[in-house]
Image (cartoon, helix red, strand yellow):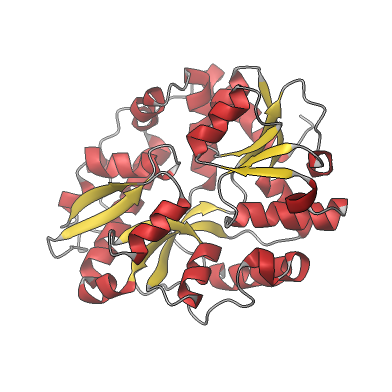
Length: 340
């Protein structure tokens, strides 16, 4: 099958669905996990956006009581966007959150006590989506268009800015009209015809595509490849460092619970269904999401993760510049393998 990598992967996932490849009903008891890892019995406050991809692992952690298994009490702090999550960790309103590595770098450079402790999602997993009848075929066609974006500080948006400049020689921030908003709002605006294109989370994209009303213009991964960037984690689990110093066992226990949740999601099809139905996803869309996420979710850093992120930063900085990046250099430390 010819076509973009994103379309090929979505097609392959649909084939799996039609072929009836199903594994379901797998209990968390099927995974030994890291039984020796135990928290101190205290509370772990986690910022969670129910419309984001991270919510699936969080729900498995709760339903399978993995926090109890690993010796801590998981408390969810609802959040609708990155700005709210940053405010929560700055104000002491949460202990853990999920940030892209560039946001962590910006916060640490500004004196915020936060540290990346584990990977979540591969770089470039999200999409730019357009109406099926749209003439837009690439970033160069964004000129003069209203483009929905989740966050101007996101690595995904910085990648789009850099790719537009390098490949299509235009300033997407000035020559297009970026409209920033929460993930569910962007989807609604796209469906209402108020946006010409939008950055859409990978967990919300499948339902739009199977409706036949929308198509993928590009996966961010395609822009990553165009820029020659390495494959690295994009979203990192992050902890407030004062909390980590006081409760190191809880940090290790949280990561152990997360890894077991990922293993459950990798083999248990039923673990995806309830929350996907709450988001009004159809069965074909759930299958597409499931296979996409199984390919893109990380549970541990690779040995070269930090060097890959630093290389990515240097390449993006050279193209996009420090104003877009928000910092002119990465901090000496923005992530750690201490809790792995």
